[in-house]
Length: 281
DNA sequence: GCTGATACCTGCGGGC
DNA sequence: TGCCCGCAGGTATCAG
Image (cartoon, chains in turn blue, brown, purple):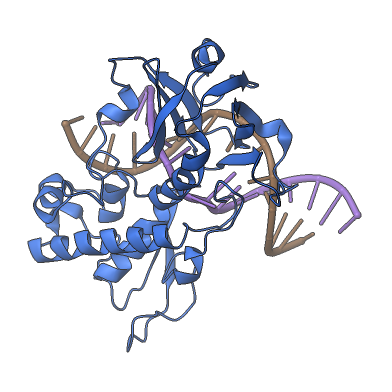
């Protein structure tokens, strides 16, 4: 499910309920996620106060006052549900099955925070104090921060013979992009997703950087995209899917003014790409 | 080192 | 109505 905008939306929804709160009780109900939940997770979390809730790429990181960090990834179908005190009026979607509640945290304020993931592609792990987690070690720059610029992206593309679509999905090149926003950014930039990454000119790479930033910022402002699974932490829907120009719009007219093209779906590396053959080159 | 294919797991929608 | 198949927002691993 979630790409950077969805994870950031979840983080913002969770922040007031988790940051500064002490975890009164923790439960690890199902340890066999993509990577096994650490056997001491409950012991480490119980009684710890969350000092900060951060995001890095598509990962959520909750720093603990006793040292170490709780690391979470939502995979493709993961959700964070917030229920309990002060949330009157929130009703859990009955389609979210309790049997997929894998990790449950109860804060001292009486709020329950549940990691639910039907497909179990998500993960929950601990970063020990002073250690670096291997999943974070090789991540590229955050696309909304100054470290992501045209020079750096061009250098990362240099010599790469893979299609630009695939290169942008490589989290070592830029962290946080996924299938939806890569298609959207490439359409805005007028770049064919099949174009070889290392053969895109400097000007077009610079434009691409701007479009990546813009599409992510707009999606965050809209609360992310709600397709099959994504909900904000409070259960609300994001609405950026209504702004998709190409994603999941195969057969529709290209939205670029004056373009006579029709959006096409192709498969690259086993995943759908959507683009306009008329205005993306 | 780079690239493409595959696997992981479950739910949903479309076609028959 | 029920069954089967393909597809889905991610990422690590393996073979070539």
